[in-house]
Image (cartoon, rainbow over all chains, first blue to last red; front, top):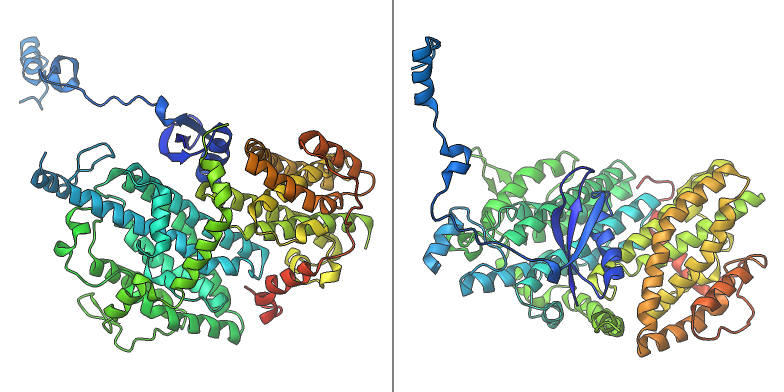
Length: 96
Length: 297
Length: 222
């Protein structure tokens, strides 16, 4: 039996999150069954049902060269900022 | 990653997904553990099911049906985890019904009255939720994730059970007696529920961090939480040795571990009868199940 | 008993007894996912019964629980169709579809009732029944698509057909019969309906079990 992955949205505006899976003979059964398994308590306002085969997983992200220039942790401006303030005479008492 | 690295990884809090490499021992124990959990949810339905048909008010009828429905839903979630690990559901059901796969001791006992309905929903589910909370951070991520839904649903069960008990202990003398009598019968299996006190570092489920708590820890947590709740209703617990020490540890009469083993291997008072009911139901509906499993027309 | 109360009890009793019968599948349905879904249907039915009993109870000065659980078997007004104990999947689906189809006709009529409370409740019930009908249709499609399924469905429908005809009165019955014939690909005979007003032996048995705990402490809180 094809397996349908179920994504649920708890409240309007929130992201759809993966909630589980339902093996079902067809989309009609998948809907009927998912509706009850993931919505009978009013815990979801919407569901996405996706045949497992349609899901394309991507999980290899090489980070060999530590490309910090494009992340916030790639920048350390403290010492230059201090020097710039000293030159401009705007150094605050808290600056070391 | 080799087995030692894997062990260090999970013991440091690491989690794995279905497609990740895992040691054979981890995988086989995991499948067995989740299967036992799934089978317990499925068999747990049967003691309560007959009382659905006898619920004394519409509210209780609805609540009990919803509770049992949740348990079937939990079985669905758990068998899906097992299926994704490679064991088909029909194969798991074969093993359950042949007695090869075990299920928790408490579901091998008879239910005698509506008092049992309250006590089971309250105390058995409470014992279960202690174990289940220890699975929320399971090293096997798909299992950890479904435990969140399971724990959320179980919390209503306990409240419903406590409400049923409260209605009876504030009701007639006869109703109160039913509750006390049920407590007397269910206490020994409850004390056995969390398993024998194997040190957690000798317990593969803990070593692999499939669960985050040893058996005795779980039992102590259950006692700490629920003995006061039972006693505050004026109900007695049938163990003269049961008491809380000054250091916070609960003392109790050592449960009969042989009896536990005897029961979970299918020799409980209702084991065979309940498995027979499932076998019969499965056989009678096999044509419909096959119709669902068949290739699309 | 006035006409309004009579009608309320008829529908409430249908939903109660059918809901009770449907709840017998909880835990033992043919597939786990179906078990969960079918259990919701049975709970919805009991919920509908409760809402209908509450309207009747307000008029009669009693409670929904008392109406649901404290009457003598001969005072229930349900159609014999819902009383039958048929813990077999083909008959369960056949009854489910036949009842939902008849009930749809009944609800359509009630939604345009001049009684606003009744019309409002009928509309509310119908919004849930939509999903019951979708569920039943889904199963009918699945059964009809396979030879064995079709044979079992036909056998079950024919067995229940006289009872199904008894759910509605002379005025609405032909509408139901026409819809059933339009949907099902096998002939449905002209037979005498097993009408409301008579009960099967199964009802008394069901009520006996249903009320056993309640009767053990009459008047008690549970």
